Amino acid sequence: MRVATNTSAMAAHRHLARTDGALHRSLERLSSGHRVNRAADDAAGLGISEGLRAQIGGMARAVRNTQDGISLVQTAEGALAETTALLQRMRDLAVQAANDGGLDAHATRAIQGEVDQLKAELDRIAGTTTFNGRRLLDGTYRGTFQVGADVGETLTVVIGSAADGVDVAGLGLSGVDVSDPSGAAPTATVTPAVSDAEGTPSAGRLALAGDFTTTGSYAAGFRGLSGTISYAGRTFDLASVDYTGAVTATDHITALNLAARPALGTATYPFVGTGSALYFTGDVPAPASTAADAVALTPAYTARTGPGGALPVIDAALSRVSSLRADLGAVQNRMEHTIARLGVSIENTTAAESRIRDTDMAAEMTVFARNQVLSQAGTAMLAQANQTPRAVLELLG
Image (cartoon, rainbow, N blue to C red; front, side, top):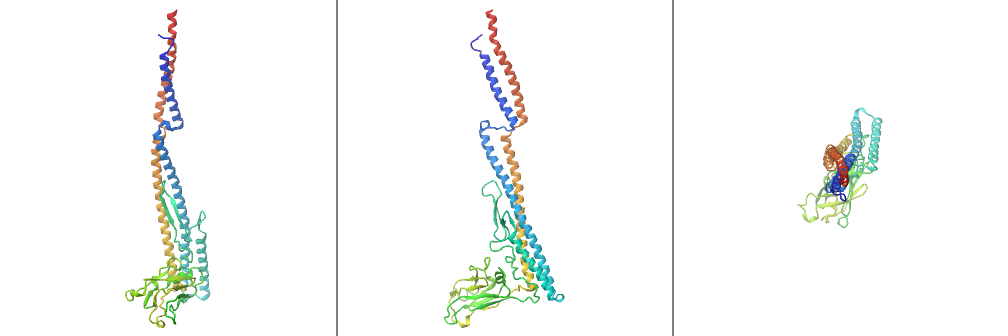
């Protein structure tokens, strides 16, 4: 028996300290709900958990981004739905105006007055439909939405084209006039493209003559032309004009009979566009006879005025708006599937992170109860160990 060193008490204290530490960790896990409260609890698990948390946060933000995209698409599609209603009404009015036998001039003017108001409303819708300050229907909208947690998981939304918007000019409705039952077609005029004196190519002018007074109506008029131009032994088809957006210097026509005269230049001949005319640059060698080889035009032009001529124009506008609405509907459906996919990914990733980070309460309560018993037993045994040296007093007595 030893008095100076109580090794039994030391052993009991060591086990009790270890039990108290385990009991403290159990209490911490049970109170916080987390199995990993610091890196020392599970260093590798903490690293994996934080990576999963970053991915979960990114996917949650992507869901909100995609919901913003759906809201934008719904805003644009709602405006286009009203545009469709306006176009349908314009078509009804054009059909009504075509009833020449039952209408007088006053009635057709009244119909045209409503058509003009509908056209003004089309322009207003196209100019004022915005989402968070960005215009949607003027032909300039292009937006990219982050729809995933990683770089590159994006979806691009384009409404219309950069060339024109969903307004009167962009839809080619500027020249629509249902008040003239005769439906007289605007015509095209041509200035010769060669010089009478020198016989060298010079700028010819293809101009429209008619009621084209609003922005965009000239471009719409040129697009409606068909027929041919004969020049320098070549025949050029107006239907093959490659219009890029508005009438610009990049527009060109294609020569049809290159095989007959292959030495006369290239296959495309550019135009230079202005407000009301296309100027032919004359990029062709001079013909042998200058006087007889002036430009000749044979247009077959679809009328822009008159109820009969308005119908195909309105139908084309309806077709374009319907196509845009279909595209937006497809984008919205895609975004809704994206949200559904992200929801499943968030759920599964969160479950994986929870298995690493969170406390299994049932298992931890078992550990806690065991540590409580061990702590109480250790305390009692430490007290007993401290009583052992007192037995030496009996030997001394």
